[in-house]
Image (tube, rainbow, N blue to C red; front, side, top):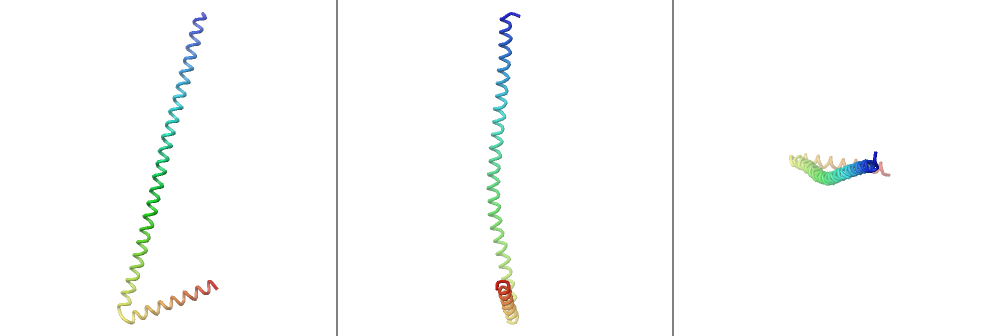
Length: 113
């Protein structure tokens, strides 16, 4: 093999190595871009989830308060309806309420001397 052929062969090998290195570098760049895109998508999804959860909690607070208010209003209306049936109904309610208040007061005294 002549020196010229040897130089050409070595040059071709170095060119192949250079092309291979460029291809590997390009592959790593593509992978880095893909990871970056995936990371951005995950970050966006996490932000959306935070907003969604915050809104769901706010909605839950409102609905829970409304439902509690409705239960209390219905209970009060039932009490008014019961007391309006007769003076005896009203007196029984007031006596029962007083008995409960007294019992709760006694219980509080026993539990917290």
